[in-house]
Image (cartoon, rainbow, N blue to C red; front, side, top):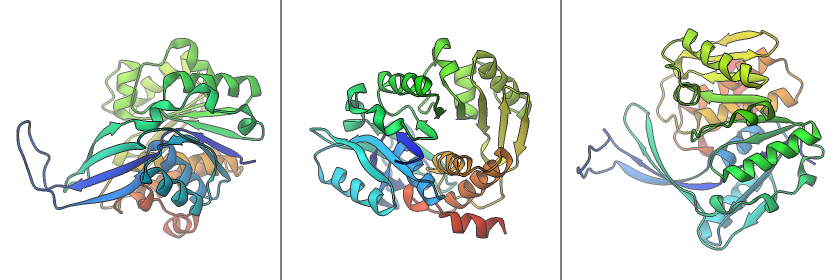
Length: 301
């Protein structure tokens, strides 16, 4: 049984590259359109596997060709797909615009991801897991059920609340590590996050609510880690020329989870995760941009 279990979304990403984003009512030409395997859950699973983790994916695909292709691709990446259900209808889709600055805008169609129910997630997958990774692209009821099962089994949950939705106060103690970016931290804490100190204050709000560890990713500024024992670690980002930030956060989370499960100290895991994310933003695509552990180690050298 895998040491890392990822419960989450699996998508086909339709990526169009543009010089600038269109304004309302405007029609523009793209520089080209590509299809990439994606979904936050799938991206994080592949990132963890490429970073050396033993990973099982729990999710849902549709009965279309996209679902079959995604399953085959992830299996080739070494992800155990025995926890994936096939639902009638379409696989999840993401429509992504990437501009010349490497920034992205994303519209999600949940498809089969919205049909992943509590009964589709067997507790047997969690028995030998060290870490369970969750995001917000499947039904909240399913996420909550997984968190409660993890709590009962004393398993660590890494939760990435993206897309951001309000987290009930009684759920915060179920989260081992909360990983979120500046905009998500701002939305969920109700505080402006415009500086590192703002991020510290937002993270402390979550710690006070019962989360054990919080990581706020700050893009080109790096990341901030705080835990309930008082530790505080700032990890600077590696300066690179970004061409596509689509999978940066997912790469960070997957690599971090794999490094923690391998017994590395938090400081080392954060450094590896930052390096992996830095490499990813220099490449196009979601899973196609995620580096291997060997590439991360070479980058750090």
